Each structure stands twice: as structure tokens, then as C-alpha cells.
Amino acid sequence: MKKSYRFSTLCITLAINGCTSDFKPDSSASGEQIFQAACAECHQPLDENVPDVLFELHPKNMNAGFVKHKIYTGSIRMPKFPNIKGSKMHSLSTYVLAHSISK
Image (cartoon, rainbow, N blue to C red; front, side, top):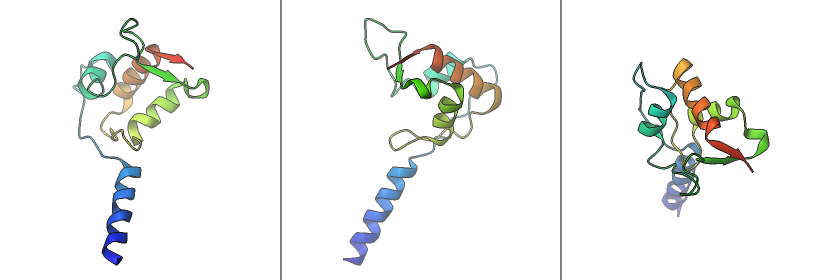
């Protein structure tokens, strides 16, 4: 019983903390290039008829601070991207916001 509890606790902890990606953007990469390399595998257009819309965000989350935090820290199903920083994080967050709609 004790081993099962430890295993369950470990699984929950890993799920909450998510995984970490060691992706590091090229110094000349644009926000779109970073998105294609690091994000597009999981994040596809919401509607194939509107390919420029990738995300639907709550109005309070339609800001660079939220997007940067989400990218840097990850979430349950999304890995952390701690190597995307500075101007590269700014480029990526700008790209994400430009391809998002408010729900």
C-alpha cells in the first residue's frame, strides 16, 4: 500500500510540474520559426478554414506576461521551455498573441 501511494504521489507531481524541453532557439530565429520548431507539433490552427488562429485565450490572458509565463513554466500537458528567453521569448509571445483570439 505504501509503494502505491508513493507512486501515485510521484505521478501527480510529474503531471503538475510537466516536463521540461531543452529546446533552445537559434539566435536568428523569428517568433514564427520558434513556434514552428518548438510548439507546432502540439498547437495547430483551431479551425482549418482560419489557419492564422492558433489559440483562443480568455480576455484577461491576452497579454505578453501571461503568454511568457505559460511558455517558461509550462502546465500539466505542456512542457516548460526555460531556454527561450529575452528577445526570443518576446518574439515568440508576440507571434502567439498575433495568432490568438479572445474568447
